[in-house]
Image 1 (cartoon, helix red, strand yellow):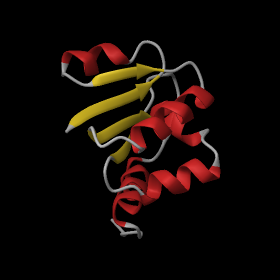
Image 2 (cartoon, rainbow, N blue to C red; image 1 turned 45 degrees about the horizontal axis):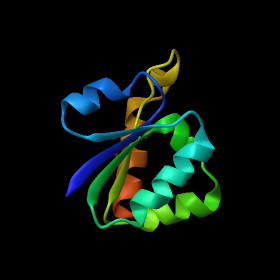
Image 3 (cartoon, rainbow, N blue to C red; image 1 turned 30 degrees about the vertical axis):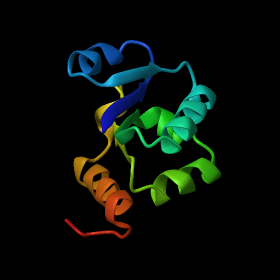
Length: 106
């Protein structure tokens, strides 16, 4: 199974060097379309998506993402200023909640 990355312009180079298929999208609508296509594919085991793009998705798509086990969809922080202001503990708690379906106190 392959790894796909959905991100905005400028973040894909490192992922390409690591062997991932990079899908550069200009906005959340394009990201939604790419994500829906990847979720319907049997080719990918992991989809990484830029957190900003994930945050802008509609509720229906988010429910589909949360229900998906394969491929597993994992957000990663954006590189723009202010993206890392989020509390690391709450970020990890949210990632775990999405992966296992409930909140774990850290």
